[in-house]
Image 1 (cartoon, rainbow, N blue to C red):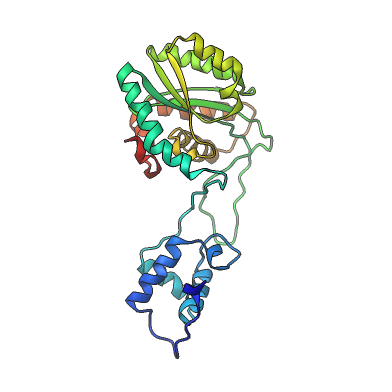
Image 2 (image 1 turned 180 degrees about the vertical axis):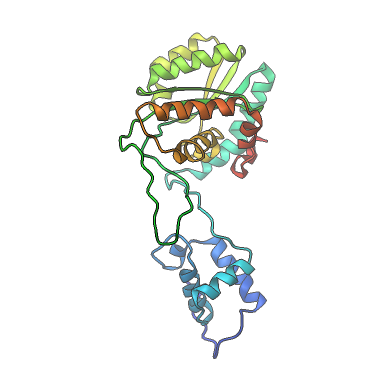
Length: 285
């Protein structure tokens, strides 16, 4: 790339100039390392050092580069991954046209908009860190069996959550049963936003929806677009913040943990409302 043509500078200055720092920040912010010919996809201090040498001809040690990154306002962060199969045109249409139309129609007919998702945590999933002496990795005893649990939930912007947990397989039948319970609990008209899973598009599901005579309508998110669904935060809360930090010791314990975590969300609507404030969900507000 022309922008990265090396420009050797004699000697080593104490720091990059303000203009060079601004240029460097833009190079890192706007592209991954792969965009500059590196094999990796994530920025490290060593890779930024290599970029500085390639672009400006200065050789900095990684530790010094780390201080430089902090000066520019950069911090280590866990990136969000976006599927290459995602269609940005369809995502933009959903944000700017499709969902606003759904919201307007819901307001006109008095419907409540829910977002739905399913997850399948396993007993051998672990998250989080713990304190231990340096160089001595701690060992936590936990069951080695997977013992999976299926969780399904639907949330709406006022903070209400409807959920179910079970140990069997999720399919069109269990989806219909959940929708029946959601309609009974809500008591009104429901606009339900789901992904394009086969269980959501099955012929029996279409027949069930038709037989509700307008009380239930399904709307489908663009493919490969979980960041458009606030219900993803439910599973992040349950799996990472709750289930993933427990050490499952016996069959059935993961199920109890999942139910406990979901019941907690049901009694704390302010947490559920917070899920809708994610920057990727600004289109909902």
